[in-house]
View (cartoon, rainbow, N blue to C red):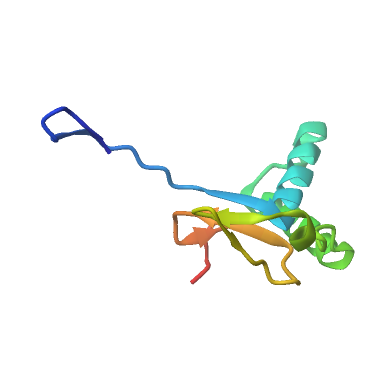
Amino acid sequence: TVENKKGRVIETKNFTNYLGVGVDAQVALQVHMLRERQSDLFFNRAVNKAWYALFGAEDVIMASCAMLPSTVTLLADGVEVPLPSDSQGIIFLNIDSYAGGIPLW
């Protein structure tokens, strides 16, 4: 929210998105790189989601981000937040859904 000198709201800006570190970012990068190389493979929503599912399933097997808790330190207001040892991703969001509409809580 942007206020003028009298405290009146003159503009409101919303940020509705999320930031992922770990598995979801790895999958998004793989999909992006494939889309850059072979855009003809992305011709409708269902197929696009299938690519995310395929790369996500592959990462379940490969566990490319299994070392995340030992390589990432999460600080909130200057205090370290311990990550569970089996964490493979961190998601920061200010919306109530993720990955195309999946509710997280």
